[in-house]
Image 1 (cartoon, one colour):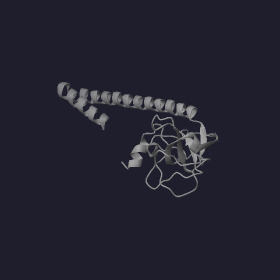
Image 2 (cartoon, helix red, strand yellow):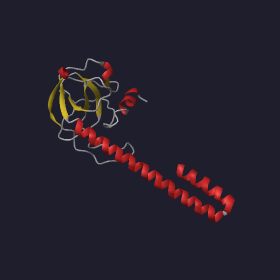
Image 3 (cartoon, helix red, strand yellow):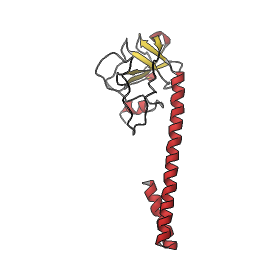
Image 4 (spheres, one colour):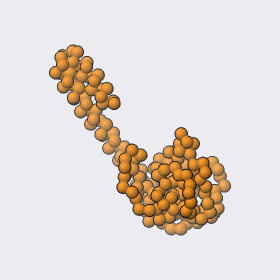
Length: 180
């Protein structure tokens, strides 16, 4: 819509000043410039996302098992009806806040986030290193990606609401959890 609006405005202005043919040319030129700008913005955004995903893969590499539920409710984000169970696997993830806790994501077999929570070290036990990262399969919400292989360390099997695929910003969890 932005491209069409700019083309119309530029083409209309030039057409009034110099005639129809120059107006059409100016509109086409404006469309070309707009398309190049939009493509470049998307390319930069993808590079930034790829860089962030790489950082997260390298920094958060462990898998844990929950041995006690988190005591601090302010360090837990989950949809209504979801629960953190003892025995769930948690994938180390970026923190929701800086409070010294170990943040984990509970994932389903289909890589959907059931919960994102901060745990004290005595509430979890390390299982090992991730065979893959939950950030390996991230694509923008508007893009269709290939289906990833099943998550090798999911939460205990159960029907539960989820918050969608893991996102590298960790901000969408708050929006999803609040139903906005």
